Length: 291
Image 1 (cartoon, rainbow, N blue to C red):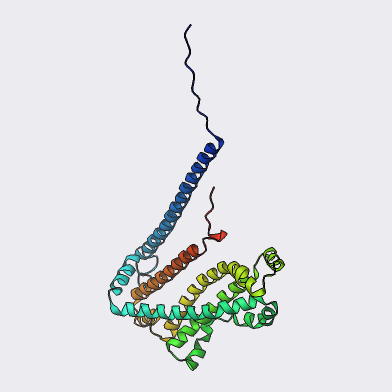
Image 2 (image 1 turned 180 degrees about the vertical axis):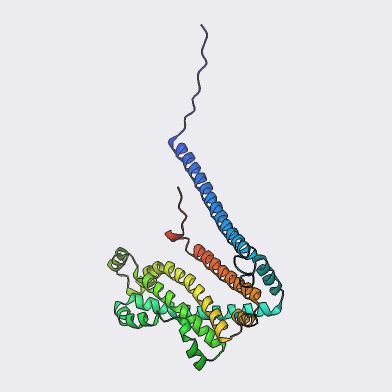
């Protein structure tokens, strides 16, 4: 008789199988996240390229006269040549200065006032009518009043930017303070936590995402109004240069300055979004969904 060799069997523990499955799941999740980012970046690049190609096509084919809509390549060449001048960067810095001062003042006022009005139902009801009356007023409607009071100075630009940026941030802060889980508040009260401690331990962390969103919205509003003040009031900045270029019929330069302002707005949005993602990594809205 032929002796059979014993067959060796390998036992795999349940914990080892679970660990392997966990590693495999994490790998798939990571690859899925990278693929999603790549698809998003590709979609953004495609949309931008399609827009620029359409711009070039419409202008070069004469669908719209190049006197009214310069070609995309011509506009970019003009912007590139302007970027080599000191005048452009001086005006660029003046616009950024007006935007930053207006947004800073709006933030310094809107966040504390919003926290106060959101924490007190009595104060919120008392100031509801004045807020709803002032908030819909177009900021540009204040330009004639600023001509008579502050004049064509930096103060007018900062006031206009701060006034427009104040309201979105105020409303977001109020709703953020009020949007708190009532169970969390009841639990805090049952443990004897005081009102002010509940404010900075529970209400403020809940309001931070709302405030971040309000800042992102207000930053765009402040830039629009700072540029508007420069354009219509002659305050030094990109808007003033555009007004002069339009007066002399320099259409290409007008479009180049509009492109520069739009690029500044895009840079501001990207910067605020990146800071928001990093600062609010703990919040569910900033967590990436994993399969």
